[in-house]
Image (cartoon, rainbow, N blue to C red; front, side):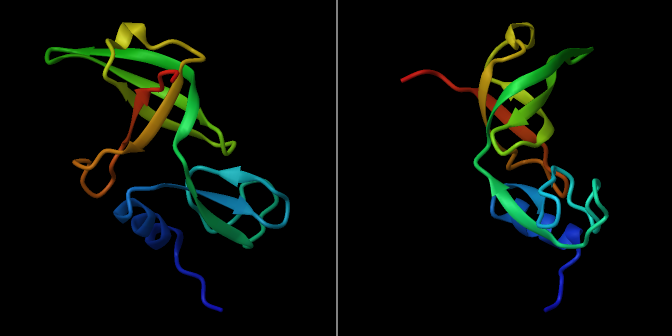
Length: 123
């Protein structure tokens, strides 16, 4: 069995519009950034999975520039990995820790698209 490089696996996931993460079959660790070795145990037995994109805001900050303000947040995904992204559709000042969000890759993000999250509303 041949293993595809992590960059190739990540590119494939992005092309399909997914946020990819890895699961170590040896120790059970999960990692948001695809790599060759498990960051916990050093195993090469890593499998790539696609996140459903649901999570909650872990940390957030508002970046202010001449062009305006934008949010940058760390999101804890339901699958147990933490990713960086932007919460869109609400003013950056309204993004709060614990806010439930749904994410997807920014279709206009180029080679390294960022994850854009929207607030998940009840019912």
